[in-house]
Structures are given as C-alpha cells and as structure tokens.
Length: 229
Image 1 (tube, rainbow, N blue to C red):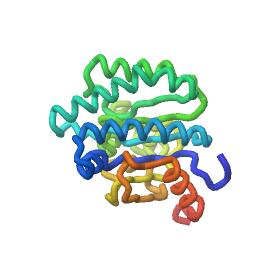
Image 2 (cartoon, rainbow, N blue to C red):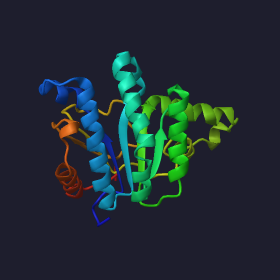
Image 3 (cartoon, rainbow, N blue to C red):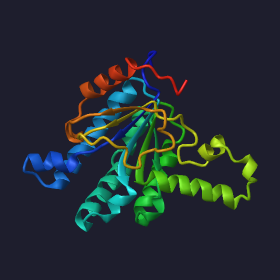
Image 4 (cartoon, helix red, strand yellow):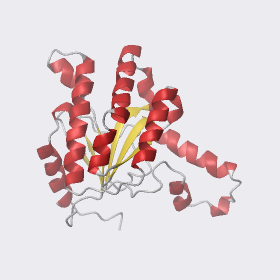
C-alpha cells in the first residue's frame, strides 16, 4: 500500500442489533446485513492492498446471548466456511480464525479448519476472524503454554509472549476501528493493540461503507505515531 496507509487494520464490528432495532427489524436481520458489510469491506480493503484485516466477529462473552441469536450467528459462520470459500480463493486471501475454536460445534470447527488449510498458501492478504475470542483469555493461554514448556523465567520476554499469541505470524494492528459509538476495545487484541491508533465511529457496522473505510485510512495517515518516543 502507499506510504501512510496501514498494513494491518482491526475492526470491532459493533451495532448490528442497534441498526436493526432502529429500522424495526429483528436482531438477526442486523447480523445478516453486518455479514454482507464484512464481505464488501474485506473485498474493498484487500483490493486496496491491505495486508491484514482482523475483525471481531464473536467474543467469548457472546456465548451468553440467547440460544436463538447464537445459533443464527453460528449459521453465518457455517455459510462463511462453505459458500464463501471459492470467493476467498478467487481473491487470493488467507483466512484465519483466532480464538477458542474448541467451543464451536465439531462440524463448524472442522469447516473453519478446512478453510484455513485450503487458503493457507494465499498471498493476497490475510483475513483474521476473531471468533469465540477474548483478549485476556488469549494472554492466559500464551502464559500457560510458556509455563508448560518449563521455560526459565529469565527467558520470558515480550517477544516470547507474542510468539504464543494467536496472531504470532502477523504484525500488530496499526489502526483499530470501532463502529456504533462505543469507545472501548472490549477485549479486542489488548496485547497487540497497545500502540494502535484508535478510531471510534458513531455509524453502526451494517451501515459502514467503503467510503467510510477510506476516510478512516485518511484519518490514520494524518496522525503521527511516536510509539512512546
């Protein structure tokens, strides 16, 4: 991408249910529209040359929502790993699911694993989908793995912890966008996002457009990143 444009963008796709409520629709209709928005934005972002797009699709807390809503969201994940696989291949995009995938039904988890395997060699960009994901859980998981390896305390540093995170093979996000007006990260990439530029937008995710994406990139390019220096 051109100078000043991020390598890695993270998006907290918030506001599906509020978008639906404002229009007198069911929450599931909001999630469906949010799904379609993700497809459009991913296609636009990778077309622009973005290297990594990480989206917060389903948090570890989302399992506590109603069974009806959770089941609908699981159906959208199933649709992604079945109907969209050919499109991922056409775009040359590598797909990765990050999070505690063991909590998903076996068939869906295998579908996720199949999609990751089939797209592993693609070089047109990486789409990371945070699913059943919690940032603190990710760090705890990394620490447990380091302890299980009987690593000397003196050998543990930031690089070692980073290598044990789900995102070990990609750069940290340059920019994190959250839609729908909330101004917090809600457990999204807490380790990786310590120096990310943050942008909070009032627009609900289903209404987010390619023009909004481009405006966010322009806002990012106008900022100076000092990394504490």
